[in-house]
Length: 136
Image (spheres, rainbow, N blue to C red):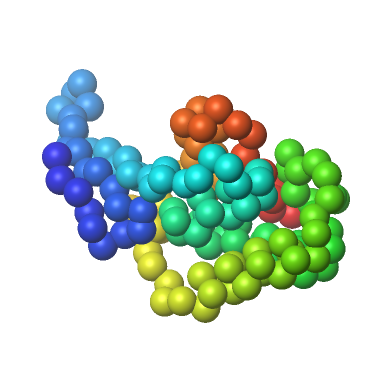
């Protein structure tokens, strides 16, 4: 087993063999789960997406929050969003989106999985619903 430090999140690489002997590479992302539990669901999920390079979700959130569409487009979102929190979240997301793009394991290794396929891991880890935006 080895770890690929060139992707964000880093990923564990294990060489395995099918029962008939053909080798394959199993790629497992190593997610950063050090996130304050005291954050609101929206803040919490944006932190998850920032720390784990979920750039597609961040871009979707940026557009939704900019257009005041959170109640229509964000899955598992309930409630209202203060203007102050909206501005803070937009700024955090913009800073991340403007930073140098880092390659994800699902891009580098052409995994069949996408960002949203990993949300269940966070729901299980933190025992809370993850807010996200379904692609159109």
